[in-house]
Structure formats: structure tokens, C-alpha cells
Amino acid sequence: MALLARMRSPFLAGQPALYSSRLMGQARRVTLDSYIVTPKELSNALSKNVPTKISTAPRVIPLCASWFLPNDPQGRTGRQVFKEQRIPSARFFDLDAIKDHGSPYPHMLPTADDFAKAMQGMGIRKDDEIVVYDTKELGIFSAPRVGWTLKVFGHPSVHILNNFRLWIEQGYLTESGEVDSAESTDYPVPVIDSTKVVQFSEIKEIAKDYGKEGAEGTQILDARSKGRWTGTDPEPRPGLSSGHIPGSISVPFTELLDPSTGTLLPGAELRKLFLSKGLDPEKSIISSCGTGVSAAVIDAALGEAEFGRTDDRRLYDGSWTYVFSIPGILDYG
Image (cartoon, rainbow, N blue to C red; front, side, top):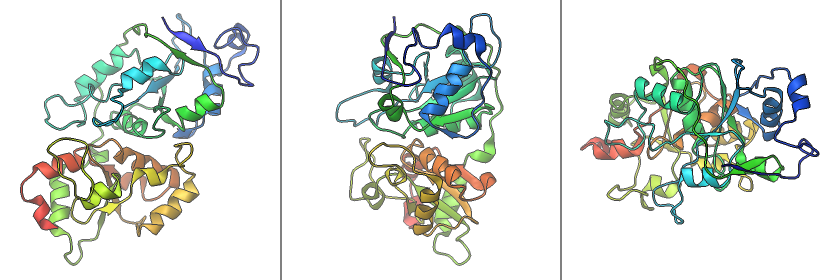
């Protein structure tokens, strides 16, 4: 059974439970407007959209996307920290389970059938408003990947919380313990939006043409650390050497975050950073990383900065793990 932890908060002061029955009676539906939302905005949306067992109205669902690298020094897992502390009534999206099980690569997109089954199992409906969040330990990291996945599969209302660490520090309620199983839904099998996803064949051609005249039309951004990109630091997965896709540009995702809070930087600061990397907003942009997780942090940051055309910002989920496994491609560099 989940245990609620009360934090000091102006919103929660004097409340006998998560959200009072008085608020429930006066509630009106609140819709979140932006992709990146603050703890205050999420708290307000939850307080004004209190679900009931008999209601069929769209709900605001916090979705925990906690995930750690396989070489995490403390051996932590996303599910572990989800049980330790989470937003009340949150569901858990398991990045290591909701994937393409037929692929040898870690985080390739699941099939449409498997995605629908996962959403059904989490008790999520197609008209629910989803707010994805990360761990308090890492700040913004894996939530953008889950948010991107939801958008690729056409979920109509998706947001990213900026961020769970601030949610805790600002005194909003959390709970801990085991989680009751959600009531299954009839989430429909979606159609994937292939325009958001880059195939390996395109990456191969870009790498092959690197350095040739007229071949500067697409920018590949790499979210890994500079050391992994240059090849001086090891990859977190055994047997995988570090390095980078020929012609790619190093944009470590940590540079896109506030160092003290782990929140995504404001749009104006992000835009200045992208320009300082020599990026051109008029050219196509592909985000990549190690396995397609932190690449989505770049994708979210590009959106927040309004940098580049929305229909020409894509993600390569095979990323470095896939590229390194293909003989010969690195010879192009």
C-alpha cells in the first residue's frame, strides 16, 4: 500500500488528503498548454482534474520514466526509485521493457501492438493528458525519451515535468511503497509517425558523404558526454567502444540543464547555446546519443528554444550502439 508523504506547500496546507472534496466539487477541467510544464502547473492541473471511478472524462496522469545507465555506480533502477518516492497516482513506464524485443539494440521503439498493450496495462486512455517525469537524482534525463515515444505513437496530449526534483523541493505531495495494479483500458493500436524517426540507411549516407561538397544539409547532434564522443571516455556498455558518427556535433545533454536543479534551461538560453555550437536552424536536425534516450533531451530542448523547423527535427533511436555494430561505417570519418 502506498504511503503519502506531506511536504510543506501553500497548496497543500490544511488539506486532509491529496485533494479535498471541496476542490472536487468546484473543479473545472484545466488543460496544460506547453510541452514543458512546471511543478506548479502540474499541481494545479491535478487539483482541477480530480478523477473518480465513475468519470469517463480525460484525466491528468503523471507518468514516471525513471531510468539509469547500466553502469550506475549505485546499481539503481527506475522501478526501485519509483517505489521509493513518486507523485501520487503516477504510473511507471519501463524503458527496458517497452521496446522492440526483436531487436538486439537496447531501446528501439516497440511495435504498435506492444505499445498499445503497455498503455492498456498502465491503465492509460487515449484521451488522458500525460505528464512524464524523471528521477529526483538525475533531473531531466529519460522523461523526454518517453514523451517522444508517446508523440511518435500519436498520443494527443503529452508533457514533460521540469522537474521531479523541484516538485519535491517545492513541497508537493509524494507517496511511496508498492503500487496497486491499474485497471486495464482499451487503448487502441496506434499508427507510428515515421516522420519523427530516422532510419540507419539515412545515417549511413550522411556519414558516407561527410566532407564532400554540398553534403552539409543535415546536422547530427550527439547528446553523450564529450569524452564518449571523442573516444577518450568508455561507453557504459561492455564491448562497445566510444567515438562518434562522422560529421556529428557534440551537444552533451548536461549542457542543456541547470547544473543545480537538473531542469531544462529557458528557451532563450538554449537557443544561444545551440548557436554557439555552430548549428543552423534552417537545416535538418537529427538527435542521437548512445541508445536513443538522452537524444530526446536535445529534441525537447530544440522545441523549447523553437530552434529549427518542427517538421525537420528527428531522432535516431539506434544511435551510437547501432552505428558502432555496423562494419565499415566509421571508416567514412
